[in-house]
Image (tube, rainbow, N blue to C red; front, side, top):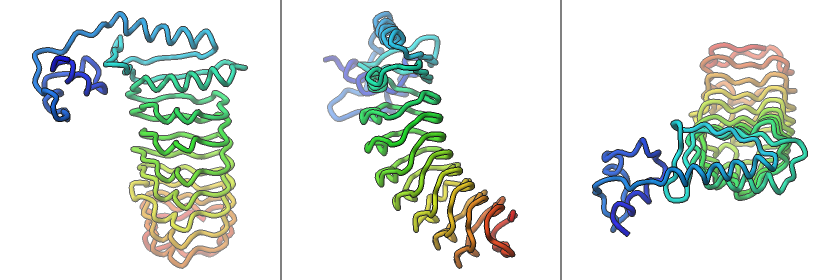
Length: 297
């Protein structure tokens, strides 16, 4: 194999229009592979487009409505992978579960630069291999009927994860190994408890757990990453907060509409830069913690 082909093999995450000499020069090249080249080898665009068209037609005939958003007016393939900007999916009513699983598994051949939208599809389960799908942006699984998640869900490498409006009652301890670049939404589920590993999740932005059936929080919940700046916990059944809540440093914390009747002794140490919401709780005459800008009772 020539040096040109060896080099292009290792830059599959780039779209053809993005590949320049600087990209090749700055890319991590494995030992034994020539770094310099004369030109990028020709790509058979017609065959690549035909391959994707065949995939799309096959699943659309079986009831999968596919909307592809390209990086440019076309998309290309390096080795066996396909780069697209975004994929939105809609499954027709009464579609069989095997077709759904086959389709979700087929997404492993894609490099989705942006987001994958699988919302509003009545999905009941996800195949284990689904976590091998490469998603550069957000994964939207809201408004489905997911009661469980694959054990391998921790392997997803995505920005934000949206799981609102499902039927989740528990999360696996391995869920705490998730590494997100953005927010996590688990609102409007049936969660009664969170694993002790939950605070280990790497994320930033907003954590939304509102409108579940949580009665308590993990003992180390307050040690959640400082990159989370907004936490929604309203409309649950929480009656006692863990002592670790005093370690929180957020912009907004909403604990409204929970049967909380007392705050932990460490709560005076909590830092809330914008607003602490305790409306609809059983706490009366609570003094505002010194590092809380505004508190609503």
